[in-house]
Image (cartoon, rainbow, N blue to C red; front, side):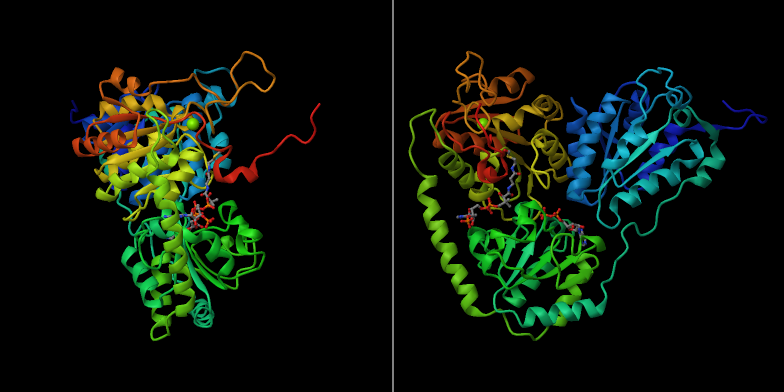
Length: 569
Ligand code: FYN
Ligand code: ADP
Ligand code: MG
């Protein structure tokens, strides 16, 4: 209690909590431990939501996905050294994908750390983080907290979004200051994501190019989904009559069954297009780096809308760059294209015809009968596809090799930002974190379609899903291994092949142990019923989908990236 002579003090916890709140942060994902446990308790006591995970990478993945879905940075809070390093994997993934996220970590005493004297969990975290994030900051003094936190938020959301690391130094965390002065330092930032208007000349150049195109194509990436201008993108597509191809996470920005969607004829439209308008996608490995067979071995006339100037010409020359935010750029382009004639009808009808053929070819494969316990990717996903079509507001989380590729191809998306997957890196380990992040921020059902191997990277956080009673259904495509489950040791030895797991694993018993609902599906009919029941019940559920161990192909659809042995001994 203060007397007339004593000055009332406040502490760094108060300043951190207040600063986060004033920057719009409502949720933190992480794991308590020295020195941040009391900070987390204080955050909760103040009404903040904390999602305590079982592994920091999953907490950081949850934060990254939350950032992507909301545009407000997802926040992950970790303990020092290994806890921080686990979180850094998720921060690096957020940076790579262009998702706003903040990794906060407690740190050991700087005095000892800088002299390498062996403090508890000593590590030079600031420098370890730096190459993997947009920026790494350290807050050394309680007075710097409001500016430090806002700086992190602004950096995470501005330009191309990404992760920011904030080192919560021991010295700062133990700080106090006069309460009255502290109040004067706290502030709410103004206009966190200002418009970045494109140059009108760049818009005109792009419009002229599009008007002269014979076979134009719009390529939509997850940057376009992130921009949240769904109606404007739809209007651009429909006003111009140009077919569109979504990147995997842009599926659903416009429904996959839209008459202009060319998703089912990717290898026809990429080589066939002459002018390609890229909105929020990068010409990286997922697009053959803009060249080669993917594009019919021709350099296309690319129009690229991106907020990051140096993305332009990163792989191949861009004929008409538009540097600006997608909202402003699409609006300007629509204005410039007013009154222009629609894309040539022959191009669109050639596409529609082929789309119909592709879909007709796929349909019977989704209905094939197999013996119980011997499902394949097509018929199991056929069942999942049918159920998800009835619940279009479900977020689909998807990772694996065959589980990823087949789901992307078979399961249609109908709403924007309802697909979260292995992303730009093509990684395993996003699964349970992505389920937690998307369930928390959307409040809608989440269905994860997971390869059995992919699931292993985040599996323990099923317990977190149960503990917070999140409406998540985890479908394990269980073929007993990586790519396939029936590989033998190449040397003929007794040890299992590197790709093979214990045969007949019952992943459903894992969630039983945690108090959730476990199911074992041996036929597509069983699977469909179990999945629909689970979505309707909103109860944390895991469905073990028993596939033929021979189902699957090595490396899925990207086997060309694998390296075969050049010379046998
Ligand atoms: C797509 N297709 C369809 C449909 N949708 N056919 C019928 N009906 C529907 N609805 C067709 C599409 O035209 C393609 O055939 C094929 O199905 C696959 O479609 P997709 O997925 O769009 O195309 P593709 O070639 O696989 O895409 C390339 C890619 C993608 C690199 C963008 O593979 C990708 O995102 N890969 C990520 C892989 C990854 O991250 N793996 C994790 C590591 S695995 P064609 O037109 O005949 O080509 C570690 O081993
Ligand atoms: P995909 O994997 O779907 O191809 P990428 O993540 O590779 O998508 O690309 C997204 C691109 O979108 C990035 O180059 C990023 O800079 C850009 N981007 C993200 N948000 C915006 C925005 N609001 N305005 C303009 N460009 C954006
Ligand atoms: Mg498998």
